[in-house]
Image (spheres, rainbow, N blue to C red):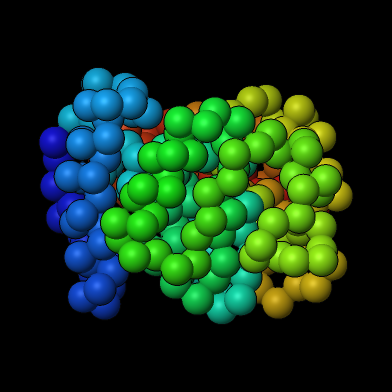
Length: 212
């Protein structure tokens, strides 16, 4: 498995607590991956580059302000949500996946890291407004941003998250979708991750921003 040093190369000023949490990720996911295949065998060897650093591409485009609420749709084992939650401890993250065993991994990793700002939710994204949860008692599930790593085509994804955005804006970008994918589209604001990371893996990787 590759090293957490690749993260510190691009995020050199992290507090010690966050550095330790990032260093823990490798062992935690290697252990869980031996029981539940949440990351492909090929990618686990490049775990920090292809999962953690890729997830943090979003943090090169926007630095979430405290109290931002973020929904990670189709999180799988916790990406991009968990790396982002480590970087932004004053923000609230809800990580959603329709596969229960993946949310089991998310919850275990969150507990092991001591993250207080993350909740894993076993649900389909489309049904979330019907199921208020403890972190938002008495409200529907609405957020400032929705993040994801290419779980479906963007037009379909937009349907899944329609109506899930809060109206208040206080970040440098207006509320919207932040979507990691291999290619952009003419109708969307696209950021090339190769502009932030020099590794060959990022040559074709992009982050798409769509205002709510």
